[in-house]
Amino acid sequence: MIQLIRGFKDILPGEIETWQVVEKTAASLFEDFGFKEIRIPIMERTEVFARSIGEDTDIVEKEMYTFPDRKGELITLRPEATASIVRSYIQHKMYASDPVQKFYTIGPMFRRERPQKGRYRQFYQINVEIFGVASPLADVELIFLLATLCSRLGIEDVKAHINSLGCPACRPDYRQALAKYLAEVDDKLCADCRRRRTRNPLRVLDCKVPSCREAMADAPSILDYLCDDCRVDFDTVKDFLDKLKVAYVIDKRLVRGLDYYARTTFEMQTGVLGAQSAVAGGGRYDGLVKLLGGPDQPATGFAIGLDRLAEIVGSQQAAPVKKPPVYVAALGEKGQHEAFQWICRFGMEGINVEMDFGSRSLKAQMKRADRLGAAYVLIVGENELSQGSAILRNMATKEQVEIPIDNIVNRVKEIISNRG
Ligand code: HAM
Image (cartoon, rainbow, N blue to C red; front, side, top):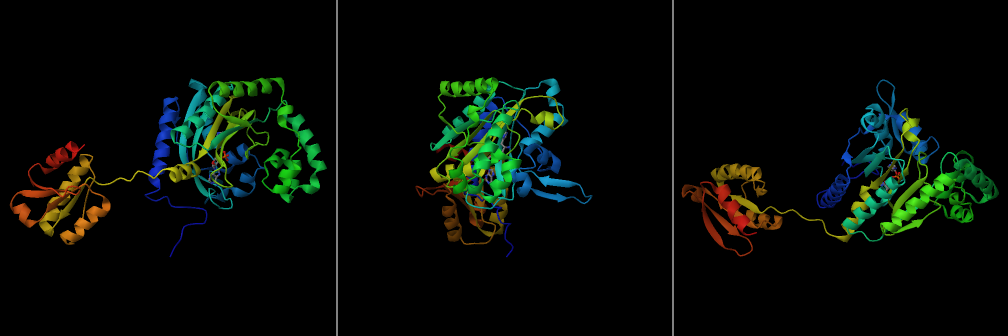
């Protein structure tokens, strides 16, 4: 038997309904806040991601699905959407009409991580990005949207973690202080962190290895190194989150796994998903549009891990199951041919009607109707056809009525809609 690839998964009916609820709730919330949907390709030239996310990140170093296409050009299955959206914003000169552009997109991402609960190699994200707004209020709006979405989905055990990563003016000082500290605790760090220590010291703050966590307990905090502009910016974020009554914690270890961030970064974290606590993550990435060859426009955004969010929602409430209101039990070839035309017309009327395409007995067909949860069964055989009528059985009351075949779709529609 051929099995799917490790870390990939099928999302089957029964589970997909929860995903649909999450996607629809998110899309409608984002549309209400003026975000427009954008769809970008699943593959890009490798450099789009390598330059944006950073060569020294786990994603670029070891997690991307990168391969040469038939002409030898290196292409990558997208590990995230932000870099592609920036590429698109620049390529289509979207900033020319109005630098302020607000997008959302939903789709699969690919990272070759070690699979575990809540962590997959193909996973889905809901991305939201704002271009052209330097004000920290855009960051506040994003965190507010995340909190509102969680509350609309009935998720309680979730909290915003926020931090500031400073800017090119103040971060170098912090990096230096951190590097000095890391040199002192070098022997307590894991092999990965020792390597990261010189190339990308901030990443060490994020390491989950217990000995590294312990070694980093007294590490200097970036918040003590912010320049005046970054400090005012971060204070504004906190102030407006307070005003909007969004609960948050300041998390000085929150450095995120991608290099493009500056100033405010945030994650929505939960305790219900085991090791994978981040349901969403994002932050400001003011330098990225310029880095990829566009104008110097600020930007900020986030991505929700849809698999994780759907898992939480699904564990809290059962997915709504769609049941056909009517099942047609057709007997004999003539009955089936007639019934088939009815189900097509019912479908056109927006009513899902199922039937059996085999030649099973009435009893077997009634059983199947029951299993599918049909409220009514429409019975039609050669006898009924010759009399120009069919029988409609109410499965709850067991009541049966004769319905003339002439205009039957509308007649049945009326009966089932009167039922409420
Ligand atoms: P990220 O933190 O790498 O950020 O991913 C965002 C979310 O995607 C995570 O919080 C998590 O819920 C989910 N996620 C990431 N990797 C996996 C995985 N292997 N399996 C399941 N879920 C996963 C970004 O991707 C940025 N592009 C976010 C952003 C948008 N920043 C600014 N704009």
